Length: 293
Image (tube, rainbow, N blue to C red; front, side, top):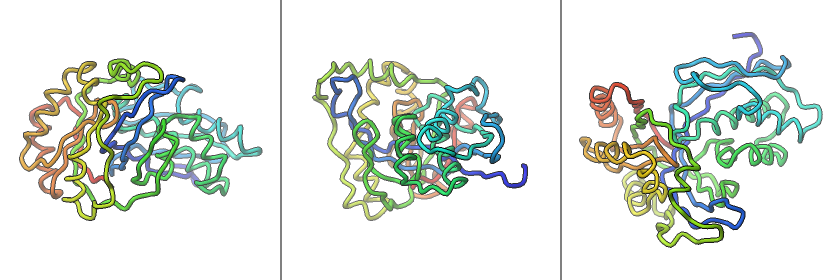
């Protein structure tokens, strides 16, 4: 790596809960989600003052584009439009997270680009220009900029205060089936201006003082996109059933619009054991034990 290169971790975003309250007249869906971040993720580097561009490596880089539609470059261009004289550079992304998987892979990469450019240019992460660049780049990008647990709402642009969640020991599992977010929302079937009649109850964060309390609260909430996602990718039904029946699993749920699901455990030994079991049973699946916080 060249001297002066800046690097940052781009952690997977996990929707511990996801409540869809309705669809706006402009077609966007209103939601409320408790978001946490995992220890696993991508890695982004920035070589300052080189021509703006993007190169890729890593086990999940195949099929990704490096053109202007890539979210890393879209974020950089959006910030450049809002900050005159912004110093840029050449990005290199090590892609470890599966794509189209409900864990914000593209969004967390875009947020990582904004963090690196903020560091290079002496910008605060709450700078209004940076916040606006995150918003226009993608709905999940704003919550990924600081990569701290919090409740997000609206279409992703309304962020609650950062939360100090107890550590959650998890296994993330993706069956290798990309799931298009738009297809899941179509399956949900809400018309423009329609409220979601079956929206689940909001997450109650005030009483989550321990991991056991938090998991109990999570169990009373849900992911409203899980049922429609099962219609788009039926493999998720068997995946979730298998997670529920893993030894010592406390909770299993889909993240985002899928297809990545997570299972929660009491400690790292139990999550590591579950990951070994799944990896032996399904060697083609992406299986990662990690910590959520």
